[in-house]
Image 1 (cartoon, rainbow, N blue to C red):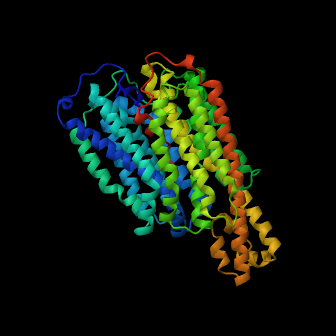
Image 2 (cartoon, rainbow, N blue to C red):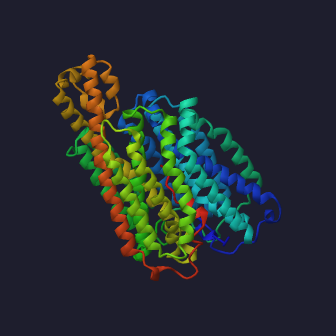
Image 3 (cartoon, one colour):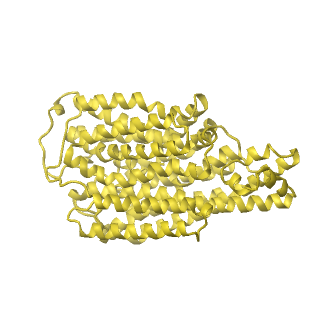
Length: 546
């Protein structure tokens, strides 16, 4: 397999002597530690999706709380990723990697013992910081431990492990949540994290970048604060009112902070996010593709999970089984797409993948209050194919249009755009979802003649009850006929809301397809800057943390 070290988040910029472990079995222990750690990280991301309804019931969470279970992680990961890479170059990649393991493991334990939505979401944010430290250093640690042909083998193993984690995540999450409880999707990380950290400290060689100058703290603060205020405003807008002083203030502050971030980055000698890279059309196109894919397909997993469990009544395990066509097809198609990148123009693969993703979202718009889960199956199949088709060419494009020494930052920027897409996608789609769900449920309930009974049982807060996912609990407090009417109305409202955001997500995927065709040009690719297009790790590492 060709050398794919340029996919590293922070590959050394100057030649370094081969580590002593390169001649013995130590390097394979190093590979094992890195793979186990990142397998745990990605598995934890995917298993959370199917556990969300169980978490909602256990912690009496609102719909906004569920959004933050995903967004708290995605935001901190997006904000900390590039800074973690810069600190790893300065302080040592093994040190930062092990520190990330410690933070992620500790935060996982806190997630498992959480007694309130706020505690869980704060712990999820801490998990994101630990995850960023691990992501930013994992590929560089492998590149530093291996040389020659063994490096290609190591990256192949790494990519296969990560792809497997993403493929089996929903099923594993279903098994754990249904079998022993949602807390254990977090508790299982503790012994694994401790073991991986011990192996890393003993077996993984340390490496640094002699030219590193440190982190861009002003960029970190303005970017993370601006992004947080934007997502917070989107999540709280329905409840507090879009014209309220609080929401308008948050949105204005977000714009001001993000504008300050742009100014700060343009004035930095070594910015954490080099905006000059976006002058290359193909680089801009690759990041638009990353954002639109994450903001459309991946953001929908939360709402599809809630539909399968809240409306159709499936358990977490049954839900995980129904996601398998999508995840397994994405895993199977990715290596095929990687091989196609040497024969088919990359922009056509990216555009085709997003068009298939767009078609998959449109195919799911047939859901109604009376549908069975099979109405989603054609969409799941198309979605798996589309995602699998996009991942390898997207990963290679993001680093192949910059000079080799900029590949670490380019890869980090692409991963950051994915996480921003997930965070803002969930928040923005959620705002639309909540509005349509409440209004259409009330309209359907009014037509049945039981609206007054439901409002009385909800103590005048029917909208709040519906948006918090308590429709079925409320129905149990009504008369038998009123309860049936509310359950049906809730199913109608949920199906209408899901259909609405599916169309919005499909439009976003279409925008990404157009951007791929227009911007990703072969003449922008840099000679010597391309990693192996078929590289498995590139395909795997670019899957977002949802």
